[in-house]
Length: 57
Image 1 (tube, helix red, strand yellow):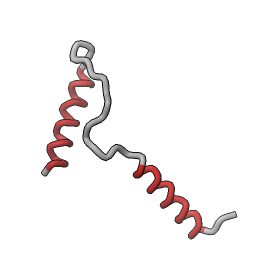
Image 2: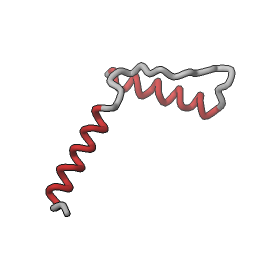
Image 3: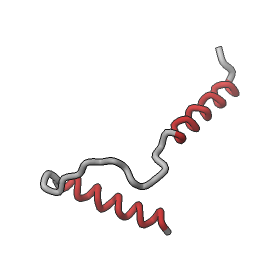
Image 4: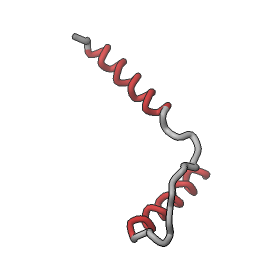
């Protein structure tokens, strides 16, 4: 059985481990095909571009 403080510590350790696994760069290996893209793909591309622009500010 763990105490609330131990639970909080383990939870923060898990969060840090998850952060450590996130990509550090904005480039990811993703295969994208304009020919196969649908409206959701185009929307996702626009959101990603806007997010990249905000991150660079």
